[in-house]
Length: 507
Image (cartoon, rainbow, N blue to C red; front, side):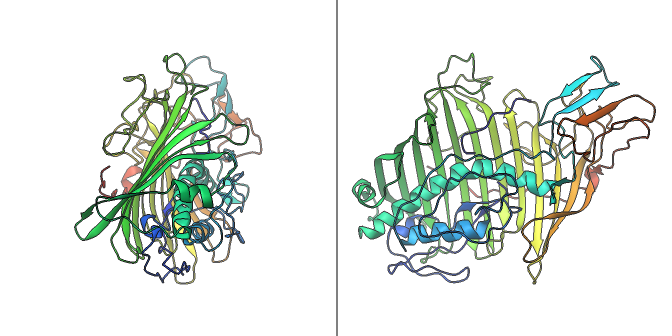
């Protein structure tokens, strides 16, 4: 399976009560203030962080560094509380409207789907070789001392978070600048130009705004509807220059913006270079495009849906409702997506970040199935968190029915005699994090399988397989001295329901 590192590519969008107000005061997790300025046009607590991210000790809120280098398992400021605090301070204009950009670097977990060398494979020929990375799901129960399911979920989310967080943060800087410039909210049918305020109050090395507008559309029932549109160019860290367009449609459903719904849509064009699956398509460059549809209905109830992919060529546009389609693929369209398609849907308790998340991803448009992680976490009154994670494969990511749900497990994805029919089972890992702890540990793991079509191996069959990373991981078999019987859980014992996505708010 081909793997491309998306520029700056989670598992939960975490929403907290919006901050702001005419006095630019911050809020606690249970208190909000009415905002009659540009702060009301932004979801003040829309941040992306994995529900299994390690907790950071502290974070600066005076000048937030939104794009940071991170390693898997780092205790950097990637947990939801730190991100929420920083974003709210930026929107409130507590200090200045500046932030720093740097290219992110998220490393892959070695516990999940490493490259595996094999000898004596019984499913076909050649019976010796190497299975590529990315195909063999949870291979070891832990990443260091952290549960593998938690580490992998954090990796997936942070790859996408580094884009989405920054796009939302740009809108936060816009709101900050609007407040400092005392710009009033527009009336229905009117718009305001924020370019001058941005030029005065926002200075970010490598980021240039070419246009910035805020308009008020017709009300949705009794609720105001705000639409912000930004176009900009980005060049920093020695990376190839990109042009971007981001659109935020935000609908406060409470006068203090403590509940709301909306959508963030984005396209980022890179004229040079091609995604690996775009090579030969005739398209030059790539477009990374995505949407986040969100809704917060109370202090303890939020849902969201994320779609993101890398499309071939620089001409990819959002549709009339500012959406993308994961069914728009290179196989049927020269400008379809070729690499790194991601889908995430979640139902989250914003007060503590726990909830239910379904995540599906597909490295290449030619794959017939998506990789899937499903996870549910809950917290007790003392702040202890427990959870259950499932890993496996699901429907092709351009499909709508059952998208984001584990529907099978494929044990031999890329080996000789491979079959993608799979078995009706999934990996399961129970995880927990004590109150005050920084990471999740594994309390039980049903992850054992042999990388062949029936997922089992017999004593004396001369079939051996070991990870190239070494370290004696759980699923390595250095000698055929005992049977390998998979302990994956039947789908009939699968207790997970994919959350319902919010209703689209249109363009």
